[in-house]
Length: 275
Image (cartoon, rainbow, N blue to C red):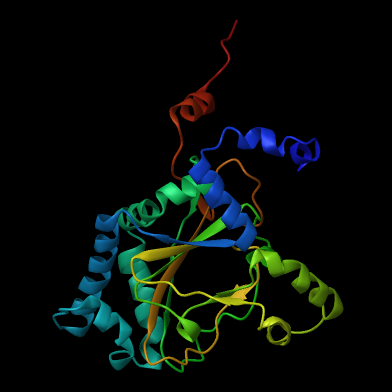
């Protein structure tokens, strides 16, 4: 960016708190942060909404939601998986209160990494990956390859502990130069071919229930067949600075402004006096 080229990088960092500097430096270096959720009530609300949905769907009382979520493959067949996923999206994650809770769990980190005047993706994406399920794969990709803005970040929230193939992988930012060399050499090959070339460089993310992931979606990431004995339920949603450049997914059709400040409201509605 132009202001970095003029040597102002250290100057504007003088205005950032030390704690936020460290978080920002780690995010830039690695391309992701795994953070503890401090807003426990919002996480509890999200868990309860899923629990109530499954209790109604399967006509059962769930005593231990984590155990139930981990073993959801004992209740769901592959042929019913997409129907249940769509029902969850329509009945649970589309609720305004649910979206507010989803934002709240990551609010402080989003303010540090993306800004405090934000746009949020209109819909929260949901994934349920059963053991050995080959229908829920997301091959290696970067969202910017399909037109997303590089100014976006993703909040990825698993409702269970995730690890190894039950989780997702990402190519750390400090390995991206290696990947670019492979892209130039194998630019006409498939994403699975490219993944095979860099699979020893990617990071498999170990995230506990009660934590979330924020990551740079410009970095290659994806998942593979879940070879573990447990299922994964996870959600993801994009956030970006309201006034940062948009890609093919624009405000209104894909993003919704969520944290406009009073001065912005005044500025938007201001009209020069007619003389």
